Length: 323
Length: 122
Image (tube, rainbow over all chains, first blue to last red; front, side):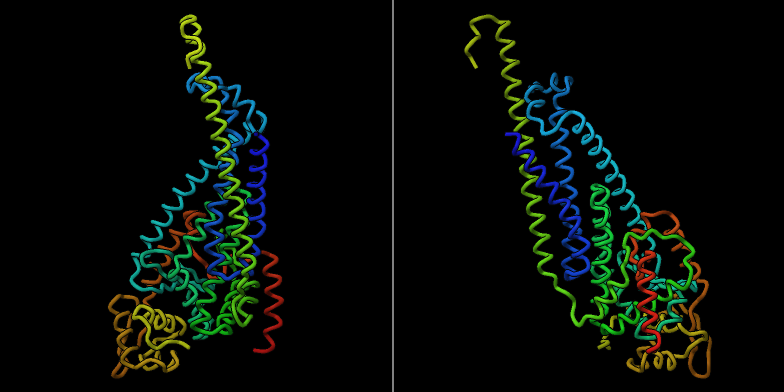
């Protein structure tokens, strides 16, 4: 039944591809909170599908290796026969699997360290707001317990009172909802699955829109849009000394047009489509994993029969016929 | 729209933001004015004293009141600590959420277009 393995693998690959395509759309059109949650959790899950597919492609050929056949007593012949791919593809899949897992673990360790450092930094400040004596316009939220809002003097000088409040409320929203969890999850998922490269930017946009909506609740949509436009204007005009690689690449124009609408978009159809894609991916990955396990079980029983058969032959005719 | 009942921490932030937005020291009355006269005088005064106790602002007597302004060396110390975090690599920066992230070249073009159209109305 190896045709089933192929079908399930193709379905899993298809759902991964569909998810990667839908994610940026959902970030722009769906309700921000739902999109943030769905896209980041979805990314982690879809990265998992990719690893399952790679493992399914690599495992039977790896298992058919002579050393493993000797140690595990399973039938290398069965594994080689029922493998969904040839030796070349399987070897490539194995290498990719190992590289991706190692990369992800290393990045997770580094991100955890960064978060702890950020938390320590936050603990060193005694106020929610920290103003830095720079003239370049800047504002960001640092996660911690509690998190802090960091802005530059240049920004405070150039904004009106309501615009300052909008920026503060926006950053407060980031801290209140722990948005870093969403963006970092998406970032890690993209490390484990490079085909998800567009997702961290999508999740970044979704959380920014979420914070924009919260700020609009306090200050009104017009004031928030004005603040955003003003800050973006100042940012393009004043030069940035450092080249920051922020995980959240914000599409300011998208955010502005979202704020210009009377109400945030719902995008229910997109949410449903995403859930459907994730469900298809889950089912096909489960099938793929199950089929791979079945191949190994078959190989194990074939292998033990062979071993027993050989032992039997050496002991003589009295052993034959017994299972 | 803006709630008067704000948490003390949030009040501190807004008062501090006002102080940094001006070039000179401000009395509690002036700070209250800058905040749109929506807060009680005593609230503003209490908030300013709290900030002073934390060493975030400095003050000098002006008549019967004090005039407050941000403590620059505190700010520079904070800046140094932030630099440490930001300069230590990409993962550190990934942890922050910038209000306006890096703009791609395409973003900047669209944005400049949008903003140019808005400006005559201001």
